[in-house]
Length: 427
Image (cartoon, rainbow, N blue to C red; front, side, top):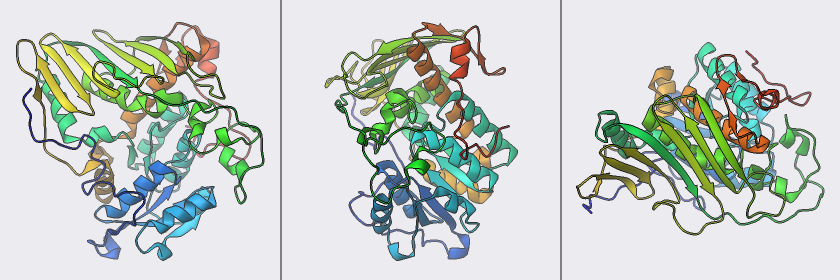
């Protein structure tokens, strides 16, 4: 194998991510206050704290507020930022939305809050960076795309690979015919996620507004498994690991193939390993059929070994060879030739790209725009719907926004929000 200079696979910001245990010492001070975007981060779990560090380190931006319904998380996140005494702390995201001095927000809450907060922010005049998956269901993704266009706001989706120079170069290589005709891409999510057990119903933690945490989701008793991080494994709040981790691989595969919504999809899956509070699958196979190619998603959450050399990654199969994109970089294997790495120029990453697009007031500059993120999220939701209903296959019409011949699947394309937590934009 030909070894080239080793590069970081995912570039979140040009300055990188500072370890969450240490204070962030860069505050965007390289621009005068009048030229800095005033940014707030909503949702202060691990990903939110990473975003706070990334935005604080970016050029032309300062983090002025953090928000989480858990006051302990909020306080801990604020302390990690330089000049933390000047960082406002909120437990209610609605206060952030109301603050007219805040220009931009990033959203790293539970999935079921991504679209409601994003829509409220867009309608209020703010630009939005929303974590993956941008939506909790298919229709929400359509609404986000519409609202971004209607209100002409920059809405960036947190699929960081879109800003990775190596991946961009590798995909352009395919687009230029370097692999010949590419007829199949495989998106691999192959890892070990331990069981979560069974948690009893209890009172919420002190100081937590649990009704606000539930928001648009149905009223349910509090359990520790429905709380920090494990909410991913409940349909009311998350999208399983297909929407959590697998969306990165689905997005890269779709990007590389140059495809959007499929003609038809087939799926199967369930729980072969978990016997606990999990509602979402630990095993899943979804195939998306297009005019002249297929995209396959494979997920196993009970393996401590790799699949085709990947834990999480993508493989593109063409007439001339294969291209792997994963933790080992972008590796090209052409027939009859030695393996090579494809590398490309570094870039600022999608956080800085978002800031630059906002300052230019030009959504067309976004590298991970919501119109792309919404489609990738929709593919994950459609795969989950097919799996949940055990219906074998679905045909989704993105114009009519229905599943042809399946009323129950069409119902799962959206949800009814609880009274008091309706969407700020409904089309």
